[in-house]
Length: 475
Image (cartoon, rainbow, N blue to C red; front, side):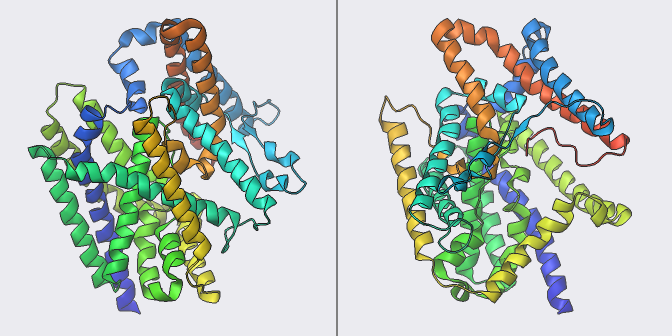
């Protein structure tokens, strides 16, 4: 057992570094296609460019008004945590509590959060993308209502509403990833990007070998890495094309392989080995670096830097960060005690996989046909949305919102994105493009004001002995 524990710990460390390198190679391979050929919007880069490359923006009154509003609101709320007699501004709304009767009780846990930064993003991103995010979220809600009306049980068990919608989401992820990856593979790569493709293939092959060495069968290893690539490619697309600063998916490789094949066919050892890299890079997708690597390449394209030299500098910085952050995390846990740090990252998330695996051991299941059926439905819906978006001129709805519609992240983000989209739509109708441009600094200020408030007040809160202050991204 001690030998197995040591080998598992070594596997985690090596897989961590290789998966990070896999991210870098994937970004280096695809960045030219996404930035130059497809001309994605990269809204988060626009926020930086609005200030860095257009200094006149910060001299405009609308920018400072937009930045001041979120800073003042979050300052009041942060102070009210320490001085309870001060009022606070409510930014979370539990609107689902009013629904208590069947079948509307399926909406009972619904809530939303108002975010100034996401409202600004909703104004800045293309209308078809913003409409897709909040529109598909409401489609998701009405699908839940219809399934509840049909007598489908709620929850995450076999045949549950949440499980079936996660299956549809997984099918959408797979088809969307294929539509992004296959054209890039068929394309004749330039010399520089060819090295990124080669590095991605080689690092993936080494990862398959390591997982096989740990006891996982080759099929399951390849399947896991395929799902890993699918998820991170799609989420990077959501950030780089849609500007959503917090993304996630509701499924893991476990969900797909176990419910497609059954837990006994997959094997308990394979599921156990899969748990380690899955928890590192698949469970909490807030930490995935691929979208931010793409943002870095976009910024490099907008400056006189050589992309190759930038990639080398970025790669070196990435390696230095890896070699410093891992031992620092261990030191932090031993110095202050892991139980005294953020409980989600030190207790709940690391133990989640093994608690779920234990529940499967206690109640194993075979192929979940309803899960497979709804995964196919999600795939066909996504294929239709991609076809309409690319081939039908009057269809102005991005397919990106479909893959995010059933996530907890979109549950909290749909309203500010809707608010930004609504203002943008009204301004364009009444004042045309000139009106849109005149209000743009105001909404850029929204984003900067909330991010600055988050940095300032999280630091002050820590100095005052506070804990768990969250301003952005909204939970």
